[in-house]
Image (cartoon, rainbow, N blue to C red; front, top):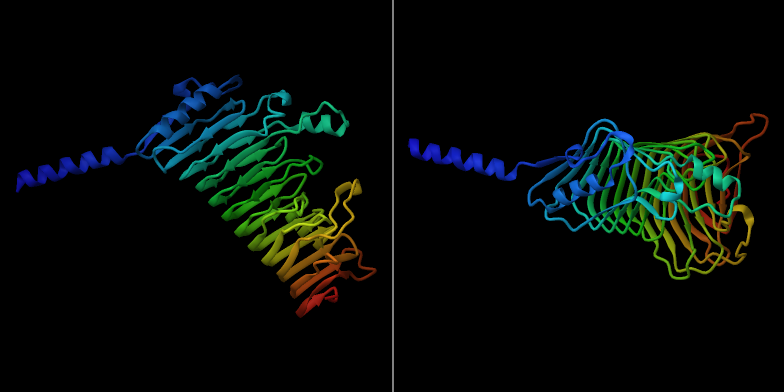
Length: 391
């Protein structure tokens, strides 16, 4: 009996050691937390270690500021349980030209089962924005701070992104990505700094996040399906947008999108769908906008199928994007403009199945009531709907 017990204990200890997660501290690979020394190689060495591990593995980033150039964390890896635990701040080079034409600062590609936990990304984008605002022809486009491409089962939890050069975060070609407790921070006038952009992905969830930026808080591009966005605060920014769509003649559609328990404060838009006025095979079908609070929002509810920012070189055709089965339910608050609801749909492909239920939006100027505008839009309204429905 004693021999059997001893054998069981030995097997348990062996199994526990075999399955215990390996941990790799970036400082042990030579990373310097001084915010000036390039720690790119130590971080990539740590990635090689966790990606090559046959058991669960963790990269640990202690407190401090770690300067990193453009990094590519590529898979597939030998295990599907990699955690990147960040207690410090990752800092982009102060010279925006280092990353300006790189497309991405930090790219995760072809990975599965990766969790990014905590930490801050500081892309130091202000100098690039200044270059662009000066209308200089020598400004690079800028890099997305965090890009997740062609990956599965990725979790981003408690990450803060500061002052991205371009988009803060992009999810492209992925399945089952969860973004929880994300904090995005950039000024209202920072150009093209979308908070979270999703395209060609399914099963993406965005929860309990605060997004303040100079462009869309969340933008949903072609090929997106089964998205769930809940408990998100947006503002300043351009709202939560599906689109812009219809840039290409052959384009995948957007379907099964839920946006609920969201707030907008001082934003350019609230809940928006936008497409270019040109032929396209794109579509939007099955969208629920539910329980949204608007505070001084310029365009609380808008479908714009004549989208053309700056009104320069507009296509001036009819949008081929077909929009159907979009429901607005329990939407309340104030509009900064008189037209609180605007459905400007395609003459060739009118919006169909638009539903308004319990929508109450008032014009912040109490001297006159808010209004609604419909063009080529069909649907129905129920419950208390203010301004009066034009469907």
